[in-house]
Image 1 (cartoon, rainbow, N blue to C red):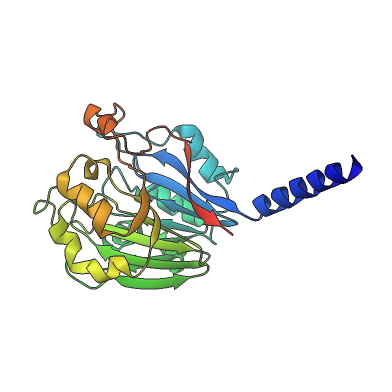
Image 2 (tube, rainbow, N blue to C red):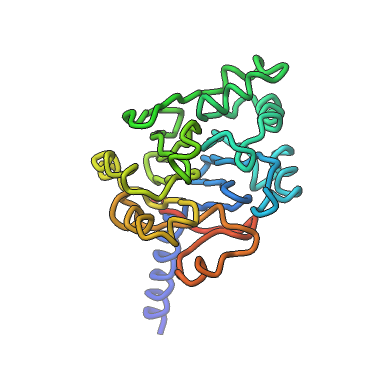
Amino acid sequence: MKRPLFVLLTLLIIGTNSHSHEQQAVATYLGNEGIMVENADTKILFDPFFHNSYNHYQLVPEEIRQALFDNESPYNNIDVIFISHAHGDHFAADDMLKYLMKYPKTRLVAPKQAVDKLMALENSQAVKKQTTAIELKRGDQPKTIKLDKLLIEAVRIPHAGWPGRADISNLVFRVTLDKDVTIMHMGDADPNDAHFKPYKDYWQKNLTNTAFPPYWFFTSEDGQIILDERINAEKTIGVHVPVRVPFELEMTGEAYFSKPSEHKSVGHKH
């Protein structure tokens, strides 16, 4: 009886150890398109500070916002903040300045339009070294930046409703954390494959573990084609979901964020 028990215990120990070496990279929902992604000891934010809900979208709850400013776990030790575009339901320059001044090790990567709004504020020169401004025109080749443990790729895709709002610099970010997990934040991208097709080689050169499209990609024929066939993503999680979840979105059966502090796995750490 002792030998079978020994074998069983050995198998349990091996199973436990092998499981401990594989950790899930996790995304935590903040509100609207606000997301925190963490992989091992790397943490990044997308569109975390904004004031305008347009009476339709989910604001970041005050307790999460305060936890960010107080550096409270799990919203602590943020490495890089990304901004998709400078609209009021995605970006607030005053909050961004306040945060960067408080945490000088945190970096900001954003469209030049957003950085310009930040730098127009009093005392903003104090955070200039923390900012990376990206200026891309429609049709430009993607831009690549290496920043600490991150490989950052950005491409300008027109804002939803194109050709309206053509002046808005909406960036799709593809970010690889620790050479291990790749995620894509799509901002308010327009679900028209004419914007994505010219970059077919760019999408295919790097597998995305999880993409975060605005929910209207799930309810658009072209949007589904882009998600399923174009951007080379293993899975998708919808964002920019209204407080009252649209019935047509629910009917798709697709994964989406709608409740702040909700967690979803986005990849594996081996």
